Each structure stands twice: as C-alpha cells, then as structure tokens.
Image 1 (cartoon, rainbow, N blue to C red):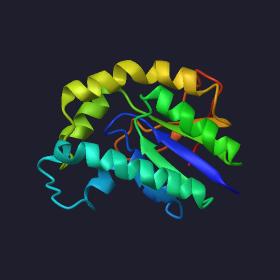
Image 2: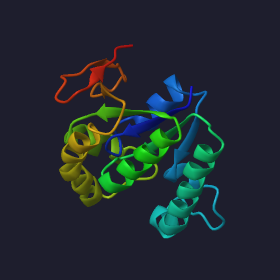
Image 3: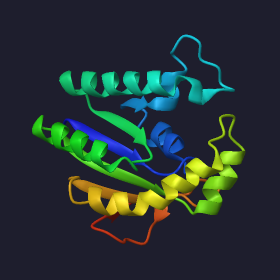
Image 4: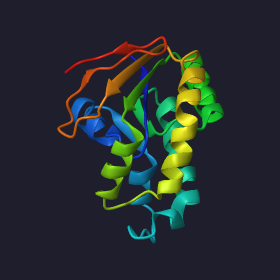
Length: 172
C-alpha cells in the first residue's frame, strides 16, 4: 500500500524518536538529516544550509512519490499550504495520507530542545507553537486519517491523547 505519513509536531516533541522506533522500515524525508549530507555542513551552524536542505527535501519527496515509495515526512506541519499541496498530490497518485501529530506541551518542547545537540532557537519554537493547532485543524480536512500521540512523558510512553479533531489516538 502506498502510504505517506506526515509526522507533525514541535521541535523536541519526539517525532524522530517515534519514527525510528515504530516506522523504521519506511523511507524518511527529514530536513535535519538531509543537511548532514550537504557539503559544508557544520552541526554548530544548522541554519547555514537551510535553503539547500529545503531543495533536497523537495527532491526527496517528489522522488518518493514518482517511485511510489511509502515514506514519512518529518515536519512541524506549520506550513499549511505546503502540506495541503503535498497531501493532494499524494492522494492523486493513489497514496493514503496519514498525519501523526506528536503532541507535547510548550514547556516540554523547550526542555527537550535544550538538551539536543542541534538546539532550535526558542523564538522559532514559539512561532511554530502559535501556528500548529490552527494548521492541524485545517490539515485534518485533507488527510485520510489523523492520529495523535501524546508524548509528554520523558520515558516516551505513548498514551491515548484527548481527541480535539477528527482524530484517532493510538497506544503502545
């Protein structure tokens, strides 16, 4: 089955952890990982190659779609128009599109982010936080399925989350 999973959530929410643990067989398109493949990458200056990594990201997405490969797109999902276009294109190509929202509080995102090697500036996290709920409400209308994973606990327990939209919660 051709499936596109859009792994959505704040920086520090645990998107990559969950992706690696539960969806290891899927190809992943992750802008942060793509930066590491670009000549001149310096982990202490991740914004330096942002433009180049976005081009590589777009290439990987469309290459996966062209080759009919199931894949995961790791994103904050705050660029609503971009995600809608991707969702519609994937569905037109016969993909089932699922959004998995990895939910954490703003405080948890800040705390986890501060412990990462590549720290996202607080103002960017705040900006993403201010857009995320509205974006998810809109995207909910386009995806075939929306799943919320509440990943608030540090031990990465996945628990059933309060459902605010047309969503399905999972438990592991």
